[in-house]
Amino acid sequence: MILMGPPGAGKGTQAKLLQERFDVPHVSSGDLLRSAVKRKTAMGVQAKRFMDRGDLVPDGILLGAIEERLNRNDCAKGFILDGFPRTVAQADALAAMLAKGGTGIDHVTSLTVPRDEVVKRLSGRRTCRDCGAMYHIIFDPPSNSGICNKCNGELYQRDDDQEDTIRARLDVYDRQTAPLMALCRERGLLREVDGVGSQDQVFARLLAAVQAEA
Image (cartoon, rainbow, N blue to C red; front, side):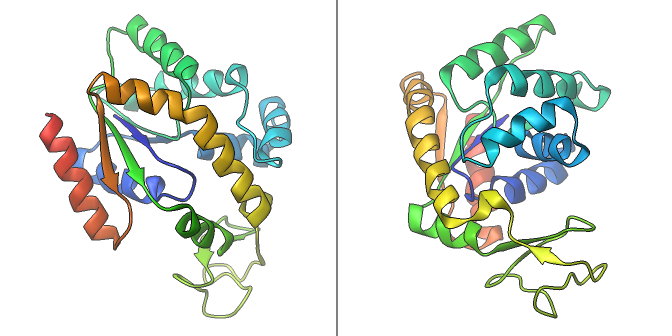
């Protein structure tokens, strides 16, 4: 399954719920890249330059990370792709990659959220420098301002959660993902789901869309 939507649409949260429901791994392109950046791998160093500007990471970097992850044993019975593909070229590369293993994509769904709501969601996020736990200054604040509940580490705002960077990321998403969305829509593959509301409300809509495609 491919789960689409702009940064901050709630894909990660909903993908984890789908993972629990269907017992298949949640594969997040963002998590793969952030892990590589944190570990300062060669791919991570390259990716960070693009991520800090709010640009999409080049396909050559991203595809390698995706292919490595999908080749692991836990993906053999299915997976939920979060944040990939974002372009027609990436979708074509994914299709070719999966075809080698004799599989394909069953579902394509997209969470739709207004731009101002996305900015509010992302600019309020704070991340622990030590354990990586995430909070939100409005929706999920820590017990003590600036301090992680789990390990007492310092909370900080990631570079890609700065408002200017968020708007740049949204511009890039709209510009580069629009052709893919249009293609999926024309082929009758895309199911658009309202991403505004409580976690449970959005999940109910998403589950209904997936079951309607089955």
